[in-house]
Amino acid sequence: MPTSRMPLAIPPTAAVLAGAMGQFLGYAWIFYLVSGFAVASAIVVTMVSPQEIDHHRARGGEDPAHHSAPIPVRELLQKRDLVVFLAPVVLFHFGNAAMLPMAGQILAKTHPWTEAIALSACIIVAQLVMVGVAWCVGWASARGVGRKPIFLLALAILPVRGALFSVADGPYAVVAIQLLDGVAAGIFGVISVLIASDLMRGTGRFNLAQGLTALAVGIGAGLSNATAGFVVQWFGYATGFLYLASIAGCALAFFALLMPETRESAAEPGLSTTAVEAA
Image (cartoon, rainbow, N blue to C red):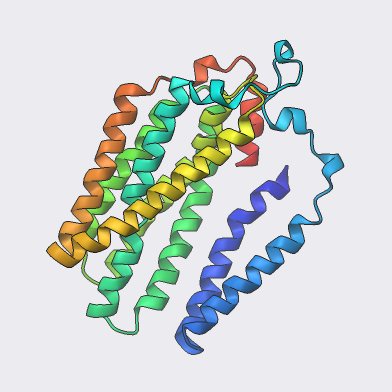
C-alpha cells in the first residue's frame, strides 16, 4: 500500500513552507498555510472509494466465532492489557507535547528572530529521522522482534531528551536534540498500531482501539501543555523540562513493569504486517 506512506513526506514540506513564510511574510501566513493543507486533506479523503476498503478486516474482525459482530464496548474496556497500554500512551505524550514549544519560547527570548526557522528545522529533521526509524521498526517487527522492547526504547528516549533540553543553549543544540524526537515518534507511529492490532485481534474493535489511542494522545498532550506552563512560570524552563522528563520516566516504568509482550498473542502474523504498512 504505497499511498499509505505518502503522509510521512508531507510534514517536512509543510515545515519548510511554514518556516519560509514565517520568516519572510509574517507569522500569520503559517496559519493560512495550515488552513490550506487542511482543506486539501479533506478533498483527498473524499477521493477514497468505500468499495476498496475491507471494513470487516480493517476493524480486526477475523474471528469467525463473533460472526463479524464486534464485541461490546463494555467488554472491550474491561481488557486489562488495553488499559495498561493506553496509560503509558497518555504519560508519553504528557511528557512529550510541551517540550518543543518550550524550546521555541526559550529561543524567542534568547535568540530573537531565529525561533521560526529553528522550529521548522526541528520539524524537518525529526520527520526525516522518523521515516527511517519507522521503516526499521517495520523491518524488525516483521523478523520477529517483540513489540515491548521496541516501545521501551521510545519511552526511554524521552526522559533523555527532556534532560538535554534543560541544559540546551542555542538553536543548533535544540535542532540536534530534536533528532531524538524523530526516533521516538518513528517508533511510536508504527508500534502503537501493531500493539493495538495484537490486542484487538478478533474483536472487531481495532478502529475503536485506534481512536482510544488517539484520545490518549490528546489527553496527554493537553495535560502536558496545561501543567508545564505553570511549572515554567513558577520555577523556570530548566525545571519545566525536568518535570516533563520525570513524567516520561513514569511512562517507561509503568510500561516496563505492567505491559506484557503482545506479539505472542498475535495468532495471524499477516495482519500485523498489514498494520506495519498502514503505519
